[in-house]
Length: 180
Image (cartoon, rainbow, N blue to C red):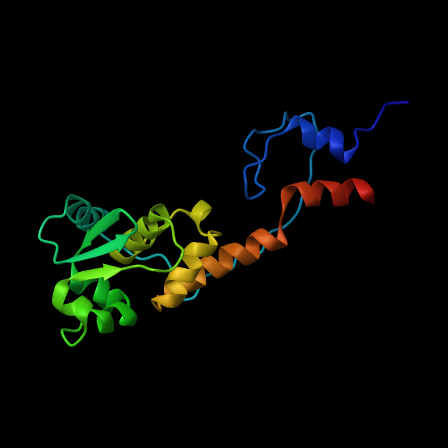
């Protein structure tokens, strides 16, 4: 009689990244699972004809600090931006950069909540480009920033990714299959 691998045996053979996806493909002879996926669209986000260089060019100008007029300070890190771009994407930032407020007069916004500079850079890049890697969406700090600065499309993307991650976790899925 052929020995059937337990879920633990199978899981030890493969590597998973921090959000539960296979980072090393299993050999074809290991096992085969067939299932159907339902693809859902994310509100306010969809395909359309776009000049893909436009967003990247805007982001490059911001990263180089060319013609920027506002700085976001997170600890020791400073991110240069264009107030008209970030204000057009976030009503909260637009209010902060109003000349009636100190941030609007000085062009300096200090981010005081507990967010790391890398996550803020992802947030800022999204404001410029409307693009983000799916793998970073489950980041809770990113969702917090999107919520705090009222960026509804990013909120929808983060929540959709978080829900998908909670619904489908590869190690749990394999354990469930072998416990039947």
